[in-house]
Image 1 (tube, rainbow, N blue to C red):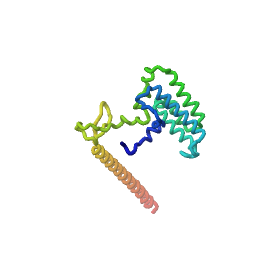
Image 2: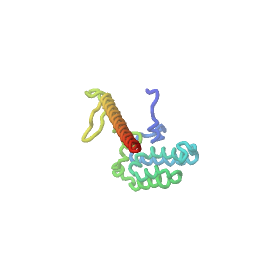
Image 3: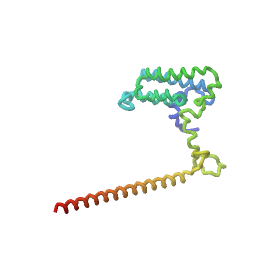
Image 4: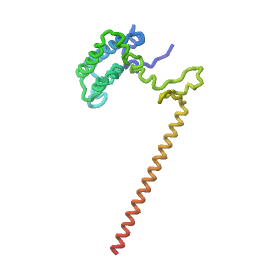
Length: 219
């Protein structure tokens, strides 16, 4: 038994995780997941209208709506990734009213997916139907930790994708490469400072020489 769990990221996307009878995404159809998320979004907008976030919660301009915007981005993440035009519209700083987002983003998103009907094959062909496309799981493939007991690679290693395959780099190796990069940056900055200083001395020498000639001519 666990003493506690960390659930904030998951709850931001699916507020009903702890509801009695709640189903895991893996046990639901893509259409059911979409309908669930849209219901949460509409319920949230309803309550946000009745009990809006405190004014200026996130900035003086549109601060209250920025709170609403942030929640919508997470609840609709997988679908907005599939429809970047609606994602951009939601992110537009000019949008600051719940009614506007209800009509131009939420209703439009509903309309687009409703066109699929109940064709399960079409739903499953969508990127948003992949469980890995959710807000909670969006970074799962970016860095893969090695947990295999039989692996000859240390569990402190990470897989970094690149080029035609994956390269295994240990945490220590990663630190070493970072230190080398910092040293190179410091050396490059020092050379630049020395070069700038030398150029400044040359300019000062030229000015001094010109000044001396002018004085001689006057005498």
